[in-house]
Length: 221
Image (cartoon, rainbow, N blue to C red; front, side, top):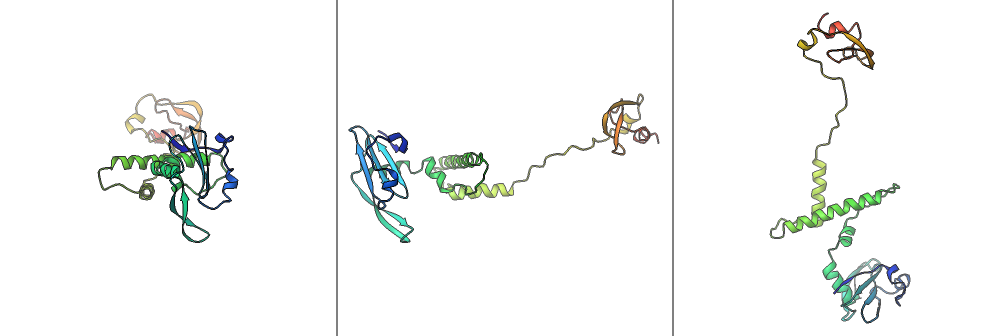
């Protein structure tokens, strides 16, 4: 027994009214077709919704409330049985929950939609896990409350400070004044004393030093 939404491209040969035509009908209008094994129904809500099932049909048809933007009030529309069953058992599926608080930011970057969708899915998955873990308690947060808690946590989080490379700390004085310190040529770098470019380094300290800076660094001046 299975019931679910079907993409229009998958049922091109099904004798149903085309989505663009059925959307011109009144809200709640539907058409259906059946080959004896599979029942398909296309229903006009805010958009054309196509549902297929090997168990449910349109009967019995019920009346449901929907908000009308044109009339600015809730109106009664018809809803087939197959739609009722799909909404009853599949009302919390990923696609519907994702659409509840989908990010509205737009970008010309090709990867933005993929990134925002992945981020949105991660939040929804975390919320569903939260609901499962708090089934027996009264601490369950609504979807909106859960998203707000995430936002508050991120706003209070301490920013990550990347360390910037700088001059190395100086060696202890006992190491700088021990025997065997002298200069040798090396690749250009910053002098440990004056911070200007230098091509000499101490063989023991491994610090770049000018000849004039060598005595002061080693405590000889």
